Image (cartoon, rainbow, N blue to C red; front, side):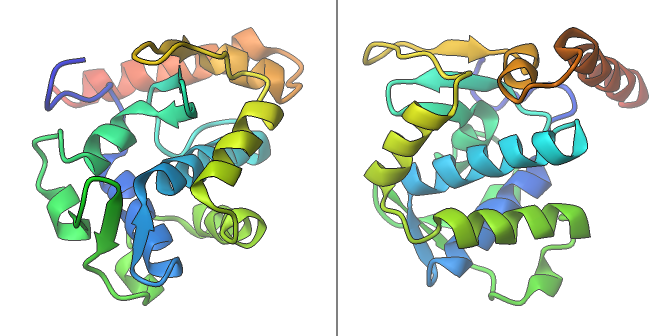
Length: 188
């Protein structure tokens, strides 16, 4: 994917606000690796509970575990939308600091159901270090595939639905693709 592009239907504003949410929960700044793992675990849990993603991002296996690809691009400030600059600022190579207060009223693109998942993920995993989260995702996310440094491998939504023991992973993935196609038609 080239710089500045995102998959059709990607909820960029929501991804930026989720990043700010976790940074705020972590006291105002958070390591990039920890943040991207919390985002992935949130997306995974939301899919598990609701049968569809929050972000409609592309998922990948990287050497440090599974990720939401465009969310990582936004965190790295590799997307052209200013929404990332409004919600987060890059302090150092691995740190993200929120520009928002911890007041949840600022997270207007996050639904109540999404907020509940984010709070649950924070309660379950927020105390972990980046490396602990990395190791957790390697061991507990069967959709993840080990890859060499510098490589990445796509994780299809079908792979995720299979790992979550959905009855019909192919049909579940088809519904996500239909949503993306509809979004693409409506965006013209």
